[in-house]
Image (cartoon, rainbow, N blue to C red):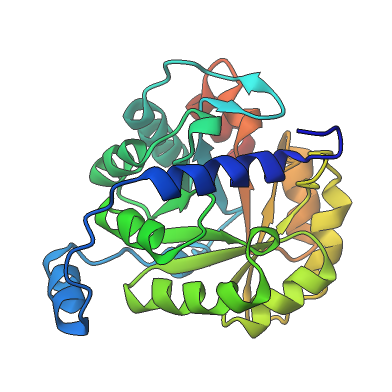
Length: 265
């Protein structure tokens, strides 16, 4: 790896290696067989509707044990205990990391989904349809698709497939061009990330400026860079529909109590 290699490059390289070596059960991918499997799964909770729940601010509270930029955050944390605390504190949805770079796994998604009463976002670095189907099987209600990770020919088919299997898609953008790509691909929920994935530097103004690029008829989520009630207030006043918060909560002494304090009138 060179100094110019970014966090995103490294994560995607590892993900491609993982996918290439994984021995997925190919199964029968006929339309009828896929539909039969989907019919046997519990229906997805409405992630997009949750992001418009009356009241506010609306928080997607995230569970992760580590991050590439911060290193270990909360090693050994129990996903059920923390996501339950988030829900009790008032989170409208949950985000659960499924990638090993963040100390996560699909089992974390599964356990959170089984105990949750609000929608669960599977947050992973998705590159193919198998990962989307695995997330659906794990009980996710939505998946993250990162525009920067997906060349133009691949983004739209993945959005379409996720919708086909019943999942909502949070399509993450980092600049105006990526917002336009997400909209063109059929995404209904756009995430504007305050973090530059190539350096991991954070600027909340980035998420606010990207909001202006998204038509009001779409759902907009601000991601990264939130450290307290003042940041929430700033984003709400800028017209965001929901805010995804991870590191600031997971690094707090009591994540659930911290979220409750942020949301207190």
